[in-house]
Image 1: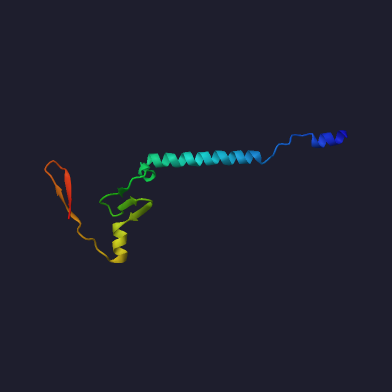
Image 2 (image 1 turned 45 degrees about the horizontal axis):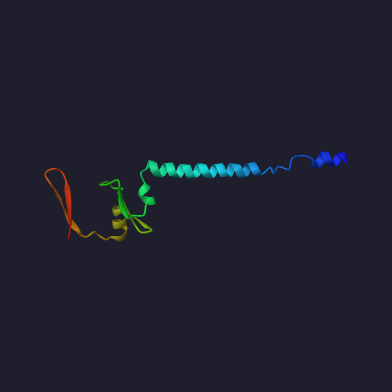
Length: 108
């Protein structure tokens, strides 16, 4: 009887409980890292409800135009799209630069 108490009398602690706790900590760390990256790169517009247009690297060869309309996000790279499809753009308006440096866009 005394022998059974020694064998079964130990703690009934689950050894996998610490692994589950480590997983929880890792998930909290991953979410915190994603929030930090979104706020660091000023990408909070992606989380909002309104539509937007964002231009990365304007005027350079690797320029990208990112638009969000509703739940759909589109990425447009002018140089890559034009080379592969052979299509050219069309005129959609005129831009005027005033004497004070302000630029006014007039759609057609």
